[in-house]
Length: 602
Image (cartoon, rainbow, N blue to C red; front, side, top):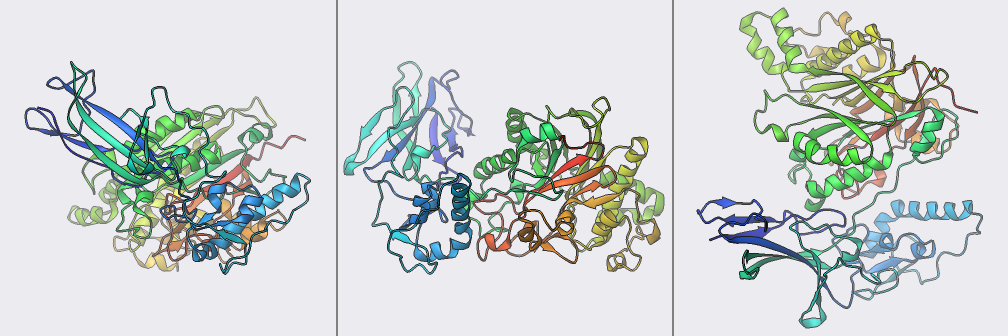
């Protein structure tokens, strides 16, 4: 007989917008174990499984802290209420929480006040409550306990047809909210616990057999929402301050996003113990990452650390809904053989209404290593050499054709976009430099066959000033560079060969060259003046630095705008990335470009 042995959730903290799919372990009639579903249309031994989800609702609703969403709020910022900032952002779990978050929280007030002024309204007195001892100097009012006010009320709750309610003791009501195995919490669930019920049903009588297996979640929390990052002009043109894909259609510019999204296999609590476990789960991160990526409205998206299964099952179909086509190159698996579905790689997406795919090149550095050792080393040294060089890294190069025109609407405008992740241990400086050099030599061949603009994006695993960065940005490496001291295989000699002829420039170095654009002073403080690169693109508790870049060919492209950089102080104190707000340990980079043959319309 079919038997339910166990039901559980990977995380018992449900988040609005993130699917909940319990793991249901079954014993089949033949005594084998399975986690496969048994639907009504395919019963086993005359039985199938029926699922239900309930919201356990009481008369009082609990306000949730906007900074620590697993904690109940005890005070509310009245400034948020007065400026009509979303009420969920106004709650804090303690005076210390409010004070610690004030530097970031005040940005919400500043932007709300700016919006009021831009609308021609005079600023009103924002605060009227007695100031609590929060240390921030900002009025806040204490919450006496569970709250039920206009800002929290669900109002009239609309359920799907057939919704039922069962009264329970203690003033609680169970509202039926779902009839499938998977349930996605909504805003109406915030502050309430959920109950999942799984029961075996006789396929003839449709009656339950035995007692249902159930699980209870903790209270549903809202999905944390970071402050939006703005597009900063670096060209002197008047940008809207936000990313608007429609505006680019008429102006002839395009945007490119590069983002290491942190593969699920690497997102462990051992590595990121400071991040709540629910915020590390792929069920949460995939929705948060999707919201972020789609929100940038980029024309071209270069992602790294994209697992094969996550590409095929989630990113590909979801971004297709938003008008993107995709190319994917999985890392090779000589070093870490195993389940190919969880091996990560590079994924390049492009908007089908703005670009069409012309050609694709795939670079496998393992093959290049094999060719190198065959040509340079005796057979007795090949095994050790390959053990050092083979790291399963790849690069994906897409040749795209623009569907928008500039000065010459009849001219075919091609674009080369390289996407790579140079994932090599820090101490193997020779291997990192060799892989970057190999990629650039391949790009030189493409440039020789077709004179087209080039973009080189990705996580290069190299700090500004390192030999790989110097090769990319300067076209050569100084023979006295300390990184060249590490070369046990002799693959970097003579140093004079470490060069290329591509006129590549780092897009984010534009911040250091522009002085007058609005918001530029704040961005300059987030740039290292010695390298003209961001202070960081990767930020964890143990490491902070820049290893991600967008390079472009300066002879054919100009930078119009850049996505603003994050401030280290704006991240959570004593922690880092990923966090509930940002679901990768890297930050996204985005640049707006214009082909030099294209001029803005007057």
